[in-house]
Amino acid sequence: MARGADATSTRPGSSGTEGFDRNLLRALENTSISVLYQDRDFRYLWSKNVPSVWKNVPLPGTTDADLFPEQEAERLNEAKQLVVETGEQARIEIKLRAEDGFRWFEMWIDPDRDEAGTIAGIVTTAVEITEQKRREQTLRALLREVSHRSKNLLAIIQSIATQTGRYSGTVGDFLVRFRGRLQSLAASQDLVTSSNWRGADLHELIAGQVVRFCADPVRNVRLEGTNPYLNPNAALHVGLALHELAVNSVSYGALSRGDGVVTISATTADRDDRSVLELVWREQSHAKPDLSGGRRFGSVALEKVVPASLNGTASLSTDDGGLTYRLTIPAENFELD
Image 1 (cartoon, rainbow, N blue to C red):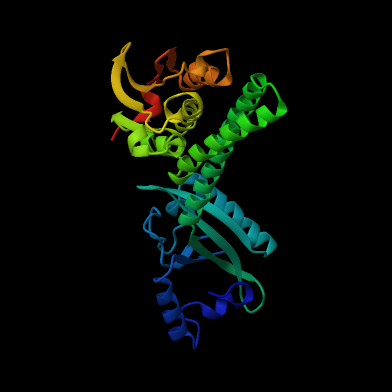
Image 2: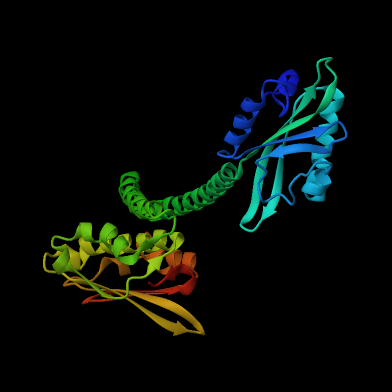
């Protein structure tokens, strides 16, 4: 539909253009475009391809009040009044409630002038933009989620840096430990990102954080119990705990020997009227585990940082024969298939 001064030449019934108009308007049925024509009093004279979500078909003589909800009808009327007063095109978006939510339409409102240049009516072209709006809303939601998770991740990194510095004797020692913990965090974050921010399952975390330290993973690591799916926050912190346990084990414990065995079990239980996941790391070693000595970051992370971040509890016990770590994770941090 032509706009401005040319709009009158393509109105149905104009001399010599009936076939063109007929086929042009028929073509609209293959699109999401609607065309409507009103006189100067904003009474509809004709319309084509009107969506079913609109309240009524704009029969001759009806107005926007008969077609749209009150608020949207008032907005359209104001825009059309401005077009008549200024002779300039107006653009407006309206939102209509439908069974599946809301439907959005972008409308161009043009003056239709007669041969003398007088405004004879209003031509409205409406295009449905619902999918575009939904994509925009989804993108905004994703950006907010990325911002939120980025802040959480930066907070975790800051905490790791602070605690690592507190328990490092030299700058070189700090850099080695901090680099390893960042790599652990990055590995867990990769799993979370690849799942579209849903999280990661326990066995995936073990593969990324523990198996790489094993000479023979099939022999060195035994998995028992269930394989819970951890939410993003739990995945990052459980991954950090596994990293600390694996580094200690490969330095002083079972994984420092080719025939050493680490058993990792995950079972569900009811504690204090709530469901929890009990994650247990067990290993045997010929030497006394070094993690029990001093308040190193490893033990602080395992006993304080990780359980606090999950609203859970943890215990770390060592003896001359090995090490046992128990982490209790509340149900809001995981789900089972």
